[in-house]
Image (cartoon, rainbow, N blue to C red):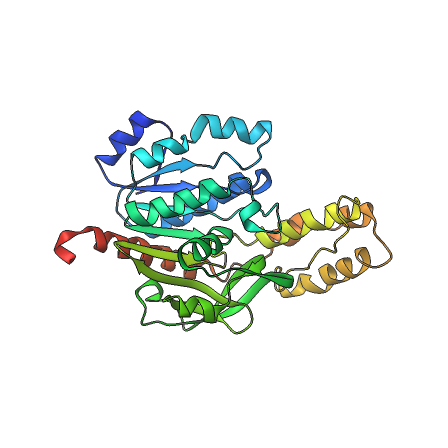
Length: 323
């Protein structure tokens, strides 16, 4: 049964009577806002099986919005205040585009801290992605994130602990996307008491989890929700800003972000626009749409199984007969 989007308080209250509720706080910037909603709701759809769930949408007020996305928020997203009045069964907080070098200087930081602390005290299971995961580690465990010398972006091999409930049924070796400028060291995460069921020698941990009082806290440093063109779109965005002189730091080409046959041409484009040919026409002549349509999606089944495991685990924690 598809997950239902709940857009107002009366619908939310009616939905709560017929199935479990998921709160999704979408903090991504305008360019990725709609895609992020689609990606997370799509995984909930696939992972929930025959169960009935409702999805309540929220976004934090400190994230800058243009008119188009502001209209979407007004039409379909609920005020954050209603989240604290009606705790969902499970909560997802997406990452966001860092504006400040120091996470604590982000305009939504205080609201994010409040929400994380409220979530682990009020919700059965909380899943935090990317920057929000780093924020939780800082706020709850004193683990500070570390700035990487260059952006970690691409599709990377991962090793899976199949004995952990969150990774049951997932292959021992998988691929997952990562896209971030910062990281929380895996040794510090383990020292803070987290299990790490999915990790990589190349890019560190992808999933970490621990019990916080009555809440299952799940931190995701990778991006299993990404669709096959997400990394390519990010690169196109950054490269476009670079060739238009809107930014002077070089774009980073995500590893393994396209089909093998398309990689040499993309690599050649990157070498040219970051060399002597900082040319808009060169970038725009590249067939990004065609290449994107041919990009493989090797992590899709892994992502679905992971979210199915998470939803199943949170359902068991809510059932008094499983206590």
